[in-house]
Length: 335
Image (cartoon, rainbow, N blue to C red; front, side, top):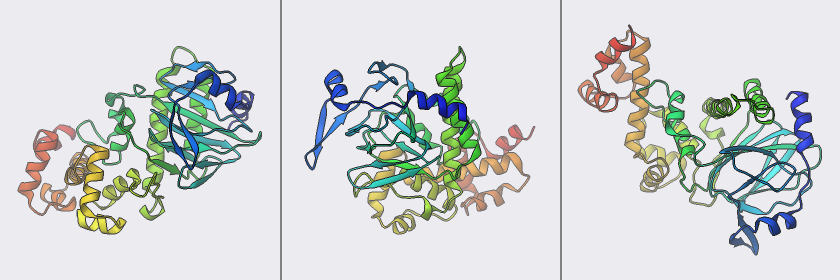
Protein backbone atom coordinates (compact mmCIF):
# COMPACT_ATOMS: atom_id res chain seq x y z
CA UNK A 1 0.00 0.00 0.00
CA UNK A 2 1.22 3.47 -0.92
CA UNK A 3 2.84 5.18 2.10
CA UNK A 4 1.00 8.45 1.37
CA UNK A 5 -2.30 6.60 1.51
CA UNK A 6 -1.40 4.91 4.79
CA UNK A 7 -0.34 8.23 6.30
CA UNK A 8 -3.61 9.79 5.19
CA UNK A 9 -5.56 7.01 6.90
CA UNK A 10 -3.39 7.14 10.02
CA UNK A 11 -4.53 10.74 10.45
CA UNK A 12 -8.15 9.55 10.56
CA UNK A 13 -7.41 6.45 12.65
CA UNK A 14 -8.56 7.71 16.05
CA UNK A 15 -10.25 6.07 19.02
CA UNK A 16 -13.93 6.55 19.75
CA UNK A 17 -15.93 6.38 22.95
CA UNK A 18 -18.88 4.01 22.54
CA UNK A 19 -20.83 5.55 25.42
CA UNK A 20 -20.62 8.95 23.70
CA UNK A 21 -21.78 7.47 20.39
CA UNK A 22 -24.64 5.61 22.05
CA UNK A 23 -25.76 8.72 23.91
CA UNK A 24 -25.74 10.91 20.80
CA UNK A 25 -27.17 8.50 18.22
CA UNK A 26 -29.31 6.31 20.49
CA UNK A 27 -29.15 3.24 18.23
CA UNK A 28 -31.95 0.72 18.55
CA UNK A 29 -31.21 -2.59 20.29
CA UNK A 30 -32.70 -5.28 18.02
CA UNK A 31 -31.88 -8.36 20.10
CA UNK A 32 -29.48 -9.79 22.65
CA UNK A 33 -26.96 -12.62 22.33
CA UNK A 34 -26.05 -14.21 25.65
CA UNK A 35 -27.09 -10.97 27.31
CA UNK A 36 -25.01 -8.80 24.93
CA UNK A 37 -27.07 -6.26 22.97
CA UNK A 38 -27.06 -6.15 19.18
CA UNK A 39 -27.49 -2.62 17.85
CA UNK A 40 -29.00 -1.39 14.62
CA UNK A 41 -26.44 0.80 12.82
CA UNK A 42 -28.32 2.33 9.90
CA UNK A 43 -26.17 5.45 9.71
CA UNK A 44 -22.48 5.83 8.93
CA UNK A 45 -20.29 8.40 10.65
CA UNK A 46 -17.56 10.64 9.30
CA UNK A 47 -14.02 10.12 10.52
CA UNK A 48 -13.00 12.02 13.65
CA UNK A 49 -16.51 13.19 14.61
CA UNK A 50 -20.06 12.00 15.21
CA UNK A 51 -21.52 13.70 12.17
CA UNK A 52 -23.65 11.40 10.02
CA UNK A 53 -22.33 10.60 6.57
CA UNK A 54 -25.11 10.94 4.00
CA UNK A 55 -23.15 9.64 1.00
CA UNK A 56 -24.43 6.50 -0.72
CA UNK A 57 -20.88 5.15 -0.67
CA UNK A 58 -19.01 6.14 2.45
CA UNK A 59 -15.54 5.20 3.65
CA UNK A 60 -14.25 5.33 7.20
CA UNK A 61 -11.45 3.83 9.25
CA UNK A 62 -12.10 1.41 12.08
CA UNK A 63 -11.49 3.29 15.34
CA UNK A 64 -8.36 2.14 17.17
CA UNK A 65 -8.34 0.84 20.74
CA UNK A 66 -12.12 1.20 20.85
CA UNK A 67 -14.97 -1.06 21.90
CA UNK A 68 -17.51 -1.72 19.16
CA UNK A 69 -20.61 -3.77 20.09
CA UNK A 70 -22.40 -6.38 18.02
CA UNK A 71 -24.43 -4.63 15.35
CA UNK A 72 -26.21 -4.97 12.03
CA UNK A 73 -26.44 -2.70 8.98
CA UNK A 74 -29.10 -2.20 6.33
CA UNK A 75 -26.29 -1.85 3.79
CA UNK A 76 -23.47 -4.01 2.44
CA UNK A 77 -20.13 -3.40 4.14
CA UNK A 78 -16.68 -4.11 2.73
CA UNK A 79 -13.92 -4.31 5.34
CA UNK A 80 -10.29 -4.21 4.20
CA UNK A 81 -7.28 -4.77 6.43
CA UNK A 82 -4.73 -2.32 5.06
CA UNK A 83 -2.12 -2.72 7.78
CA UNK A 84 -1.74 -5.13 10.67
CA UNK A 85 -4.43 -7.64 11.57
CA UNK A 86 -7.83 -7.83 13.22
CA UNK A 87 -10.51 -10.26 14.33
CA UNK A 88 -14.09 -9.99 13.08
CA UNK A 89 -16.54 -11.69 15.42
CA UNK A 90 -20.00 -13.09 14.65
CA UNK A 91 -22.26 -14.87 17.13
CA UNK A 92 -20.86 -18.21 15.95
CA UNK A 93 -17.20 -17.68 15.12
CA UNK A 94 -14.04 -15.60 15.21
CA UNK A 95 -12.62 -14.60 11.83
CA UNK A 96 -8.95 -13.59 11.97
CA UNK A 97 -7.91 -11.28 9.15
CA UNK A 98 -4.49 -10.10 8.07
CA UNK A 99 -3.14 -7.41 5.75
CA UNK A 100 -4.90 -7.10 2.37
CA UNK A 101 -7.63 -9.58 3.28
CA UNK A 102 -11.18 -8.45 2.62
CA UNK A 103 -14.54 -9.42 4.02
CA UNK A 104 -17.89 -8.45 2.48
CA UNK A 105 -20.70 -8.33 5.03
CA UNK A 106 -24.22 -8.74 3.74
CA UNK A 107 -27.07 -6.68 5.15
CA UNK A 108 -28.43 -7.73 8.54
CA UNK A 109 -25.31 -9.77 9.40
CA UNK A 110 -24.56 -9.61 13.12
CA UNK A 111 -20.88 -8.82 13.65
CA UNK A 112 -18.31 -6.68 15.40
CA UNK A 113 -14.58 -5.99 15.10
CA UNK A 114 -12.54 -6.65 18.21
CA UNK A 115 -10.33 -3.82 19.47
CA UNK A 116 -7.46 -3.03 17.13
CA UNK A 117 -4.16 -1.44 18.12
CA UNK A 118 -2.77 1.88 16.91
CA UNK A 119 -0.59 0.17 14.29
CA UNK A 120 -3.55 -1.39 12.53
CA UNK A 121 -5.63 0.21 9.79
CA UNK A 122 -8.97 -1.31 8.78
CA UNK A 123 -11.00 0.47 6.13
CA UNK A 124 -14.79 0.17 6.04
CA UNK A 125 -16.71 0.84 2.83
CA UNK A 126 -20.48 1.18 3.23
CA UNK A 127 -22.55 0.51 0.11
CA UNK A 128 -26.02 1.84 0.83
CA UNK A 129 -29.18 0.59 -0.81
CA UNK A 130 -29.22 3.06 -3.69
CA UNK A 131 -25.44 3.07 -4.28
CA UNK A 132 -25.79 0.92 -7.39
CA UNK A 133 -28.55 0.20 -9.83
CA UNK A 134 -28.78 -2.93 -11.93
CA UNK A 135 -27.73 -0.90 -14.97
CA UNK A 136 -24.47 -0.10 -13.19
CA UNK A 137 -23.78 -3.81 -13.07
CA UNK A 138 -24.28 -4.51 -16.76
CA UNK A 139 -20.60 -4.27 -17.65
CA UNK A 140 -19.81 -7.03 -15.17
CA UNK A 141 -21.44 -9.62 -17.39
CA UNK A 142 -19.56 -11.30 -20.20
CA UNK A 143 -21.67 -9.54 -22.80
CA UNK A 144 -24.77 -7.43 -23.03
CA UNK A 145 -27.11 -10.37 -23.58
CA UNK A 146 -26.14 -12.92 -20.94
CA UNK A 147 -25.07 -13.11 -17.32
CA UNK A 148 -22.51 -15.43 -15.75
CA UNK A 149 -23.74 -17.12 -12.61
CA UNK A 150 -21.20 -15.42 -10.33
CA UNK A 151 -22.23 -12.02 -11.71
CA UNK A 152 -25.59 -12.58 -9.99
CA UNK A 153 -23.68 -11.95 -6.77
CA UNK A 154 -23.22 -8.34 -7.86
CA UNK A 155 -26.89 -7.75 -8.51
CA UNK A 156 -27.59 -8.68 -4.91
CA UNK A 157 -25.59 -5.63 -3.83
CA UNK A 158 -28.25 -3.40 -5.34
CA UNK A 159 -31.09 -5.12 -3.49
CA UNK A 160 -32.25 -4.75 0.07
CA UNK A 161 -32.55 -8.46 0.79
CA UNK A 162 -31.83 -9.48 4.34
CA UNK A 163 -28.84 -11.68 3.95
CA UNK A 164 -27.14 -12.52 7.19
CA UNK A 165 -24.05 -13.86 5.43
CA UNK A 166 -20.53 -12.84 4.51
CA UNK A 167 -17.62 -13.74 2.25
CA UNK A 168 -13.97 -13.68 3.27
CA UNK A 169 -11.43 -13.18 0.48
CA UNK A 170 -7.77 -14.14 0.82
CA UNK A 171 -6.21 -11.88 -1.80
CA UNK A 172 -2.60 -13.02 -1.28
CA UNK A 173 -1.59 -9.36 -1.62
CA UNK A 174 -2.80 -9.29 -5.23
CA UNK A 175 -1.26 -6.12 -6.72
CA UNK A 176 -4.27 -5.21 -8.83
CA UNK A 177 -6.59 -5.51 -5.84
CA UNK A 178 -4.26 -3.42 -3.66
CA UNK A 179 -3.89 -0.77 -6.38
CA UNK A 180 -7.66 -0.58 -6.86
CA UNK A 181 -8.16 -0.07 -3.13
CA UNK A 182 -5.51 2.69 -3.13
CA UNK A 183 -7.30 4.45 -5.98
CA UNK A 184 -10.65 4.26 -4.16
CA UNK A 185 -9.13 5.80 -1.02
CA UNK A 186 -7.39 8.57 -2.96
CA UNK A 187 -10.54 9.52 -4.83
CA UNK A 188 -12.61 9.52 -1.64
CA UNK A 189 -10.32 11.60 0.55
CA UNK A 190 -9.02 13.89 -2.22
CA UNK A 191 -12.16 14.33 -4.34
CA UNK A 192 -12.90 16.40 -7.39
CA UNK A 193 -15.93 16.61 -9.70
CA UNK A 194 -15.21 13.20 -11.19
CA UNK A 195 -14.53 11.25 -8.00
CA UNK A 196 -17.99 9.85 -7.22
CA UNK A 197 -18.53 7.97 -10.50
CA UNK A 198 -14.89 6.83 -10.46
CA UNK A 199 -15.33 5.42 -6.95
CA UNK A 200 -18.47 3.53 -7.99
CA UNK A 201 -16.72 1.95 -10.95
CA UNK A 202 -13.62 1.07 -8.95
CA UNK A 203 -15.66 -0.60 -6.22
CA UNK A 204 -17.37 -2.71 -8.86
CA UNK A 205 -13.94 -3.50 -10.29
CA UNK A 206 -12.72 -4.47 -6.83
CA UNK A 207 -15.60 -6.87 -6.24
CA UNK A 208 -15.16 -8.39 -9.70
CA UNK A 209 -11.47 -8.98 -9.03
CA UNK A 210 -12.33 -10.66 -5.74
CA UNK A 211 -14.77 -13.00 -7.43
CA UNK A 212 -12.13 -13.83 -10.05
CA UNK A 213 -9.65 -14.69 -7.28
CA UNK A 214 -12.26 -16.87 -5.61
CA UNK A 215 -13.22 -18.57 -8.87
CA UNK A 216 -9.61 -19.62 -9.44
CA UNK A 217 -9.57 -21.36 -6.08
CA UNK A 218 -10.84 -24.83 -5.47
CA UNK A 219 -14.43 -24.74 -4.26
CA UNK A 220 -13.22 -26.60 -1.20
CA UNK A 221 -10.91 -23.69 -0.40
CA UNK A 222 -13.70 -21.14 -0.55
CA UNK A 223 -14.77 -21.08 3.06
CA UNK A 224 -18.47 -21.63 3.70
CA UNK A 225 -19.43 -18.83 6.03
CA UNK A 226 -22.64 -19.11 8.01
CA UNK A 227 -24.55 -16.75 10.21
CA UNK A 228 -26.31 -19.82 11.64
CA UNK A 229 -26.45 -23.51 10.85
CA UNK A 230 -28.92 -22.97 8.02
CA UNK A 231 -26.86 -20.39 6.14
CA UNK A 232 -24.64 -21.25 3.17
CA UNK A 233 -22.09 -19.04 1.50
CA UNK A 234 -23.92 -18.01 -1.67
CA UNK A 235 -20.74 -17.23 -3.57
CA UNK A 236 -19.47 -20.77 -2.97
CA UNK A 237 -22.67 -22.21 -4.45
CA UNK A 238 -22.65 -19.90 -7.47
CA UNK A 239 -19.01 -20.65 -8.22
CA UNK A 240 -19.71 -24.37 -7.92
CA UNK A 241 -22.43 -24.03 -10.56
CA UNK A 242 -20.11 -21.95 -12.71
CA UNK A 243 -17.42 -24.64 -12.56
CA UNK A 244 -19.65 -27.71 -12.95
CA UNK A 245 -22.44 -26.51 -15.24
CA UNK A 246 -21.83 -29.19 -17.92
CA UNK A 247 -22.87 -32.21 -15.86
CA UNK A 248 -24.36 -30.69 -12.70
CA UNK A 249 -27.59 -31.91 -11.12
CA UNK A 250 -29.35 -30.61 -8.04
CA UNK A 251 -28.90 -33.95 -6.33
CA UNK A 252 -25.14 -34.06 -7.02
CA UNK A 253 -24.66 -30.50 -5.78
CA UNK A 254 -26.72 -31.08 -2.64
CA UNK A 255 -24.74 -34.22 -1.86
CA UNK A 256 -21.45 -32.39 -2.40
CA UNK A 257 -22.34 -29.74 0.15
CA UNK A 258 -24.16 -32.11 2.49
CA UNK A 259 -27.60 -30.54 2.15
CA UNK A 260 -31.09 -31.75 1.38
CA UNK A 261 -31.84 -31.13 -2.30
CA UNK A 262 -35.15 -29.40 -1.61
CA UNK A 263 -33.53 -27.12 0.96
CA UNK A 264 -30.71 -26.21 -1.42
CA UNK A 265 -33.19 -25.45 -4.19
CA UNK A 266 -35.26 -23.23 -1.90
CA UNK A 267 -32.14 -21.44 -0.63
CA UNK A 268 -30.93 -20.60 -4.13
CA UNK A 269 -34.35 -19.32 -5.12
CA UNK A 270 -34.63 -17.21 -1.98
CA UNK A 271 -31.17 -15.67 -2.30
CA UNK A 272 -30.95 -15.10 -6.07
CA UNK A 273 -34.54 -15.05 -7.27
CA UNK A 274 -33.65 -17.85 -9.72
CA UNK A 275 -34.36 -21.58 -9.57
CA UNK A 276 -31.49 -24.07 -9.70
CA UNK A 277 -32.46 -25.02 -13.25
CA UNK A 278 -32.44 -21.40 -14.38
CA UNK A 279 -29.05 -20.74 -12.77
CA UNK A 280 -27.58 -23.68 -14.67
CA UNK A 281 -29.24 -22.56 -17.90
CA UNK A 282 -27.88 -19.03 -17.45
CA UNK A 283 -24.35 -20.35 -17.09
CA UNK A 284 -24.64 -22.78 -20.01
CA UNK A 285 -26.07 -20.17 -22.36
CA UNK A 286 -23.47 -17.63 -21.23
CA UNK A 287 -20.63 -20.00 -22.11
CA UNK A 288 -22.32 -21.01 -25.36
CA UNK A 289 -22.61 -17.34 -26.34
CA UNK A 290 -18.85 -16.91 -25.86
CA UNK A 291 -18.12 -19.92 -28.05
CA UNK A 292 -20.45 -18.56 -30.72
CA UNK A 293 -18.88 -15.11 -30.63
CA UNK A 294 -15.22 -16.14 -30.53
CA UNK A 295 -14.96 -19.53 -32.28
CA UNK A 296 -16.15 -21.20 -35.47
CA UNK A 297 -17.05 -24.47 -33.75
CA UNK A 298 -20.22 -26.15 -35.07
CA UNK A 299 -23.31 -25.17 -33.09
CA UNK A 300 -24.14 -28.82 -32.33
CA UNK A 301 -20.67 -29.27 -30.81
CA UNK A 302 -21.12 -26.14 -28.69
CA UNK A 303 -24.48 -27.41 -27.47
CA UNK A 304 -22.89 -30.70 -26.41
CA UNK A 305 -19.94 -28.90 -24.83
CA UNK A 306 -22.15 -26.84 -22.51
CA UNK A 307 -24.31 -29.77 -21.47
CA UNK A 308 -27.11 -30.11 -24.04
CA UNK A 309 -27.20 -33.47 -25.85
CA UNK A 310 -30.29 -32.45 -27.78
CA UNK A 311 -29.46 -29.60 -30.23
CA UNK A 312 -33.15 -28.73 -30.67
CA UNK A 313 -33.55 -28.18 -26.95
CA UNK A 314 -30.38 -26.06 -26.91
CA UNK A 315 -31.82 -23.89 -29.71
CA UNK A 316 -35.03 -23.47 -27.69
CA UNK A 317 -33.26 -22.48 -24.45
CA UNK A 318 -30.83 -20.19 -26.28
CA UNK A 319 -33.67 -18.33 -27.99
CA UNK A 320 -35.49 -18.06 -24.63
CA UNK A 321 -32.59 -16.21 -22.98
CA UNK A 322 -31.03 -14.37 -25.90
CA UNK A 323 -34.08 -13.62 -28.02
CA UNK A 324 -32.61 -15.03 -31.21
CA UNK A 325 -31.10 -18.18 -32.67
CA UNK A 326 -27.47 -19.26 -32.11
CA UNK A 327 -26.82 -18.65 -35.81
CA UNK A 328 -28.16 -15.10 -35.65
CA UNK A 329 -26.14 -14.44 -32.50
CA UNK A 330 -22.93 -15.66 -34.17
CA UNK A 331 -23.54 -13.57 -37.27
CA UNK A 332 -24.21 -10.50 -35.17
CA UNK A 333 -21.08 -10.88 -33.02
CA UNK A 334 -18.60 -12.00 -35.67
CA UNK A 335 -19.07 -9.09 -38.04
